[in-house]
Length: 523
Image (tube, one colour):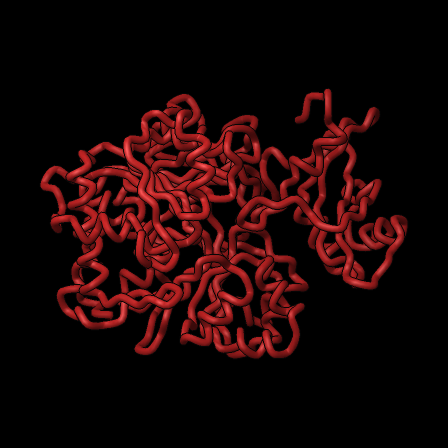
């Protein structure tokens, strides 16, 4: 990458730059197709022309509903150049959830993967604002309406009225607490994220960036911008399954971002899989907590791999803190593996008492508030919820509870809604989960609060076990008591075969709590 390049102002700038200076260089590989920078930019410009001909302009929304596909990225670039936004929908949603999100977004054009076309057909009369549905196939073969649309279009450049403050992406929250909210991210938001979260991603000649996280998640859509920004080839997988990841690595991909659940699957897959993933130069992980035993096993298994942990949220375009490679292997500070690292450049942090709204003393627990050029424009069609989340002076209330140590390392202790209050004591589930995850029989643990007539809430552990292992409830409670204050220890333990999870691997604690809180008011 040319370090003298000025920072981009518009989302499509870097793509156009590499198309100009390295038109024949490899840009993107997907399944059996590869495009150069010149070819990829031409596709985006043709798509911009096609959207313009369909009447799409500044302030409009187009939608994408498919597994990972270059069309989603092309749509994001092309629509942004017209001042329009792309709503990227979770392809795992059920019909009622899809029509809600599509209608909420106001999408006028919907690009749909072949496998999801029957679902959209059933919903067609329930999404009246969609004027055109365009089918896209995985392989781009005969009959691909999306490819035909590009082929027949006249290329079009960026519209003169487009501004960096235009919303370019709408991503829907996972909906773990009711209807999902559309997070509006501007071109300036995404560019700020690319620039600020770039530390540790010093791509070198020969590097290839693997994009395997779903594009409906910032771990896919924001992350792919790193490779585009630096002019590094991208290998995109359709899904994050083992075979696809292995194929991408064998194709030369050596940098990636994945969720911890993938790491666990690799380590359980045997020596060949471990050796193959050892080719990765950078393994960035986030989007859900990483159990410390799992992380330590990974660090030991891949001594030459640089690990980066990231913490963030859709509302800041992705990353807001990171724990860098050297800190993963620092023998003097092993406790920092439990942290989320330090703030990335351009970010500010407050730790606020959620009751009083006042900053807590240094080292104290509170809600993490962030301010950054990455903070979203707001929630689509939800002004009241936006005002409740982003203050008038730009601070984003994260909903996460945590603390900051004397060296600036951020520790995320819990979700505000997941904090357990038992007998007036605030109990933070990650602290207990870290202890339980160290027990040799426990594969993964989740801590929830359940109703208790005396204390209001009681601590319950829900666990999965390693294959072939058994453990008694009293043994686990005593194990916790050896490492934690007694009031923090679980009063009961449930063993389950698997956890309910959202698409990015986060355990759905709301689903775990539901049977215990039916008919009651949760706190």
